[in-house]
Amino acid sequence: MSKSKSSESVKVVVRCRPMNEKEKAANFGRVVSVDVKLGQVAVKNPRGTAHEHPKVFTFDSVYDSNSKQVDLYDETFRPLVDSVLLGFNGTIFAYGQTGTGKTYTMEGVRNDPERRGVIPNSFEHIFTHISRSQNQQYLVRASYLEIYQEEIRDLLSKDQARRLELKERPDTGVYVKDLSSFVTKSVKEIEHVMNVGNQNRSVGSTNMNEHSSRSHAIFVITIECSELGLDGENHIRVGKLNLVDLAGSERQAKTGAQGERLKEATKINLSLSALGNVISALVDGKSTHIPYRDSKLTRLLQDSLGGNARTVMVANIGPASYNVEETLTTLRYSNRAKNIKNKPRVNEDPKDALLREFQEEIARLKEQLEKRSGKRSQSKGRKRRPGESGDELAEGDEDGEEEGDGDEQAGEMRRRMRIIGGSSRKSWRRRGRPSWRITAWWQRRN
Ligand SMILES: Nc1ncnc2c1ncn2[C@@H]1O[C@H](COP(=O)(O)OP(=O)(O)OP(=O)(O)O)[C@@H](O)[C@H]1O
Ligand SMILES: [Mg+2]
Image 1 (spheres, protein in one colour):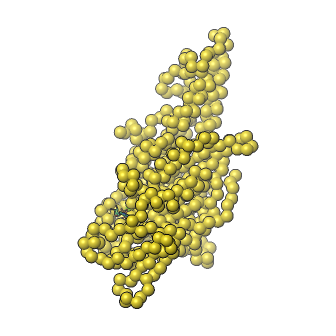
Image 2 (cartoon, rainbow, N blue to C red):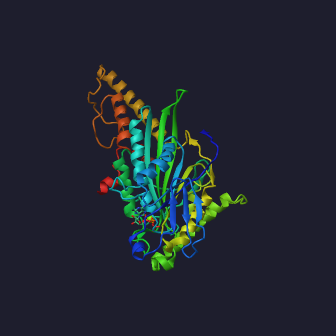
Image 3 (cartoon, protein in one colour):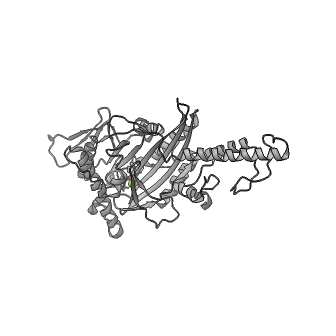
């Protein structure tokens, strides 16, 4: 079923953002120095003596305030996305104090190729890989959810008031029931999915960040790849990429959060401390119980922390003396996370591969069409030529288009499957057949 692989550690990188205007105006000292070559971050105590040694932490890689989005992608994230294309699960998550650059790292500035973050860069990477592939067939789906005040919202759903439940299955683990997913065939389409979801995301202004994420957001890309094996059978590998932009930890005294903002902050801090507890329990070597169930966030990240996934954690920090305690807390947490062991494996031929269902559906339709054209040529006493228009519609054809030759029609369907994509699996189930003719709802909305 799946190829097992030995365990590997969570990869942790640190990124320090530049001083912001407020920090410069307030003349805060710089307490963080980054040694890119050694992979070290040193933090000095702003109230310490000149002889006091800074605290030094070593990571897989560290990035200073001049770091370029594309360098982070190429060095740190590209290999993980490559392994998702091979059928591994992968998770990238940004962790850190409010205002330190988590959203900048994950999403960045969308319309600026130099400043766009991991999520848009991964779109480009995935679809370039697919366009160059020769003997594989791919199906890419995207979902987008947020955990807002401990409730799960589907950012792609028309009904934003609806809350979703977490469920668990022995074969696939924890999942979100009824989460919509959209088949996307190009960078443009998947970007559209992200943009629609972002419009629904909970963002608010605080004293620490004008556009502060008030929820944890997870953009999920599922990539199915079908390929002919040496045994002559088609095999499907499925990799799931979780791109996680966490809300930041914050202190009320600094953010000035009140009312709804304060309520949000309390929940954010609670789930982040649940995440911290899970990390501690995983690495302390004594815990027999890992408290994944203490928050929705930790349940959703269960496979990414100690399970079947490759994981990269980006710890975002700021350079100013004003935030030294939060910076040290982030570095200690992330330093611990380096010791988490995961057991990633290629997910091969899972029962619920959508691509398999599409292939079977096409084979069924093809057979049906062949039977029909066989009957027709008998009754008309001649064989139809390829491309010659037919006389009736295929069963259930909603659009009323004319049919061609059976093979050609099946080929056309296969092409549509690749090119048009479908809608959510749920709507397919409801209709009892693939829905590649359905125009995605966001296209209708625009
Ligand atoms: N590496 C960087 N280079 C330039 N600007 C940055 C960098 N990192 C962050 N910024 C800027 O700092 C501000 C805060 O960043 P961002 O919104 O990404 O923080 P965050 O960690 O997501 O905060 P929150 O937890 O409140 O959501 C933004 O204006 C962003 O553009
Ligand atoms: Mg943010």
